Length: 327
Image (cartoon, rainbow, N blue to C red; front, side, top):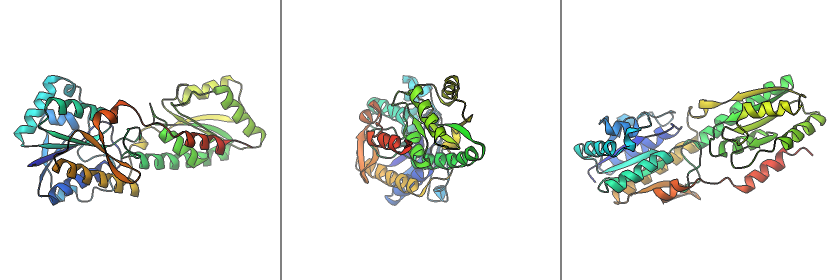
């Protein structure tokens, strides 16, 4: 393999820079040229390429975001857009690509691989949602749950000071991993996720029970994709059920969950995946996502990684219910 390209696509996630650094330095270690593709597939179409070297990725492992920037490309969804991308890759003598992103990124990679099999494609899972099949942890997830935990801890302080009930909305349109994990870690009274139907009457009964037992505040963590409609709608529904024991407030954490310095394990896992991705390309392997399962590198074909979502562990959900129950 003469030259490898690397890009980040879709939503940014802490740890992407650690993965980029790992890809670049592994390629150089194996005497392979490396190019950065700016703004994902859109940069590929517009030939927005830059050569990378060891110095290019110095002092980036601790940074959030992505030095290669990210974008969503409607043009890459077209045959003409992918043809333009292919022509640019060939013009730069790029034989293999490391794609860092989520299911949309891998869907594009799978289609591109089918149309142009002479360009090898390997993915690294970059998404805070942790919902891809084929890896226990995605790049960005560990940092996101720690960011959410820290924010909820702070909200809890003010909730206790003012006898308030806070509904805290975290990211998770289709998956409740962030909500469930951060809810357990912060001792939330309830955690509402897309994977389970929200029973508002049961939620109100739980909150009422807490009030009767002299709780001075309550926290409910809500994933944005919860079936009851998100934190604002759920808060209103609770009010309508005549629960007025506490002053009710809503906080949406939003995009702070995407930013910030990646945690220690985030940097290590992202680095592991980057090394494995380059080694896979050099071994003439293609068409799969690199993941970590049971502390070991795993390779999952793109079509398997994107055809379904990783499911929430039932034991974790049971634990959240047990630990939040008010005896």
